[in-house]
Length: 120
Image (cartoon, rainbow, N blue to C red; front, side, top):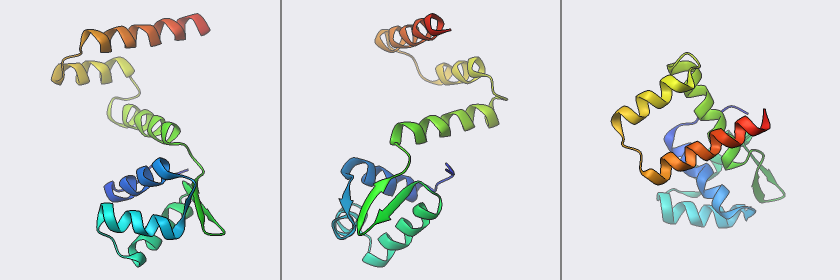
């Protein structure tokens, strides 16, 4: 899977994830309504994402080969690796320097860390 998508490709993938399995004709109608795309544009982007092994179109039914969660987890890991030399603490420090965490968000992060430490 290649997680380098343009913003329109990501929006398209999000539509597929929200509606899958979806008939290709229905996908054309959804993209016309939500993205103001023509049929040819929908099929061009669909073909591109199939080539990138993110989606598949089998007998007119479009489904994902990679889940939304897995795609964005991979994309996030790539950002941390490329922009913060793989340092998750550096990424978090940069993130919280521009956005305040709510108490609920901080508690949720603590729970994730605690769960990870119990697994290790």
